Structure formats: C-alpha cells, structure tokens
Length: 212
Image (cartoon, rainbow, N blue to C red; front, side, top):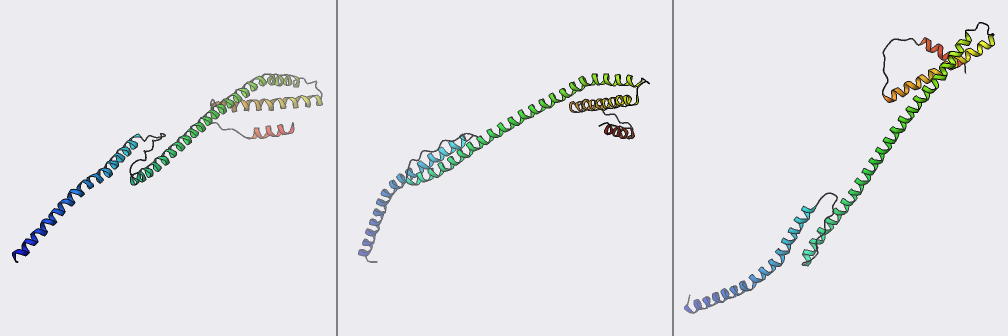
C-alpha cells in the first residue's frame, strides 16, 4: 500500500479505538448503576423472603412485604404478597376448623360421661327398687303358701289364693331378672355353664299367660 493510505488507515484505527474507549467509559458506569438498582432490590427481596419463610409457623400469620422499588420489583413483591395473604387466610381457617373440632370432641366426651352417669344411676335405681320390692313380695308368697296349707278353704277361695301366689312368683322372677340385668351392666355377672331343660320354662310361660 502507498504510505498515504497506510497513514489514513492508522488514523481511522486510532479514531475507532478512541470512540470505543469513550463508549466503554460511558457504558460501564451506566451498567454499574443499572446493575446496582436491579441487583440490590433483588437481594433485599430474597433476604425478605428467607425471613418470611423462617417466620412461617402453623396457625400464625406472616406479615406481607413492603411494595417499594421499581415497577418490575413492585410487581414481583405484589405477587409474593398475594401468596402470603392466601397462606395466612388458609392458616386462619384451619385454626378455626381445629378449634371447632376440639369443641365438638369436648362436647361428645361430656355427653358420653353424662350418658354413663345416667346409665349408672338407672342401674342403681333398678337394683335398689328390685331389692326393696323383693322383701314384700317374698312376704306375699309366704302368706299365700301358708293360706294354701289350710285344707278348709273353699275351692273358689283356693283358686283366688293360687292365682295371687302364681302372680307374685312371676313378679318375683321379673325382679330377679332386673337384678341380673343390673349385674350385667355393671360387669358383675358370673356365667355358669350347665345343662338345663326348657320344659319347666314352657310350663311357667303357659301358667303366666293363663293368669293374665
């Protein structure tokens, strides 16, 4: 190449190098400023999210983030706050549900205790009444048996006394059954295994129906 052209080419390269250096000098601070404005809020946002994550406990609400910064940062924070609000609402509803469940279980336990007490009182009442009624019933049976031992009784009178005796015996059997039921409910029943015949019970049932 001619020396003139070489000299012109060197000048162009020098100018391009100078322009490049100027652009770098201008762009570098801008990039640093831009990155500082973008990275710093993101770092703060990340730190805030870690703090909120550490604060999350069952049945406790978590405070939302302050919506500050650029438009983009505020948009991200707003979305995060929507999530935190939804989470806080769900935790509050769950707490109410568990409180209602605990209240229902408490009421059921109290109702169970009341029912057991009422059942125990009923069993004691039946047992006491059965004992109280058995004494005069045995007296009636004894008196009717003594009366039936008199051979001078007329046929009709004897029939009346036999009916009273059989009815008293039936009532005494019912009282004994009530006592047995009370023992069953209180867990005091003693079961004995032995053979038996149903014929006497058949005859007893027939006689009981005939006396009604």
